[in-house]
Image 1 (cartoon, rainbow, N blue to C red):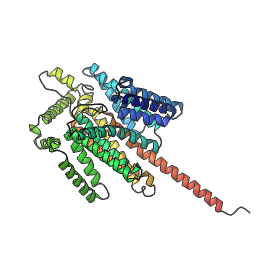
Image 2 (cartoon, rainbow, N blue to C red):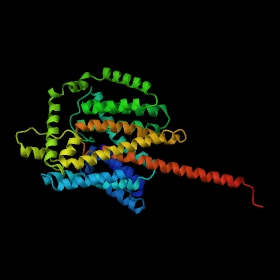
Image 3 (tube, one colour):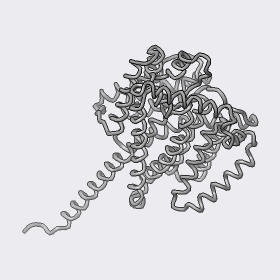
Length: 436
């Protein structure tokens, strides 16, 4: 029954995408981030559904004249980074491993960004894209949180259907999802029941983050919520509410889910932390030996096993050391430029919208989303210092969509200003005395 329902939903989505250019973008993000085929045991489970949805979106928008390429600065920097990854893969220590990793992400890291910047041209579509992408991941996490809470809790340690990466990676991605959802809450209908359901769902997403027992995710979540409360217009009140909720959560959730936090004070004695320090040093040594292109994508383990078979090698355990060791210093420079540009854009959008929300209350969600995404990305940049995150797609696209907020909001405000100006001119003309 579930397979039949999923099949009908996927087919209906693809048909809608064929018939509607904006619908194709919404469907693409739904398939991309909720991954409904992961929950199917039928034909869709093994089908290249994302590639199919991507091709459908390209065709639907081209046929309707909605594909109009544009290249804002952040997309240019991203393309430069992907070009550098391509060059690094070409000259990698083990090119076969590098190309296996590279080719898996060609559609999502090469084609999709150009498509999305070429087709998302109004705020309403962007709002739906935010909801579908963050909400898709949020629904998966909500179901996991409800299921595990009803079982009395569990430790999420492995990737399961609809997840993104392992427990640590998924926990960190969910921190960014929570920030995005908090920004979108002003788009909800003004009904108490709807808001209760929304915040209850977010609570279970938070429970899933706790169930991952990821120290990086919990630390990132704390940064996001504290920063969000501190930068608000009522910081003391919001910080007090946050501390109260954190205290209640600590009392309700069994202490075993926070036991790994105690190792922050004993990093040299913790095996996992020692492994991170060791692999950070290995990545640094890679960068010193191959400063220009690094050892190549996904070659950290392969390279170090080859030169020192007796050394226990894991992944780099840090996106910054991962990029540094595998792509060299220029690769890390491009990655950091991308991050800084994303933060700057979100900050400027948030500050731009502060005086405008009163006159345009329907655009409050633009202010809120930029605000919470800014806080979320600060937390993400902290947490990703402890995890391999280069190939995880949602953080890239959260920033892409975040940088679209300002130009689309400015276009919408200009349209309204122009409409208001024309209306005033018509009224003035109607009231003016007739000639003669």
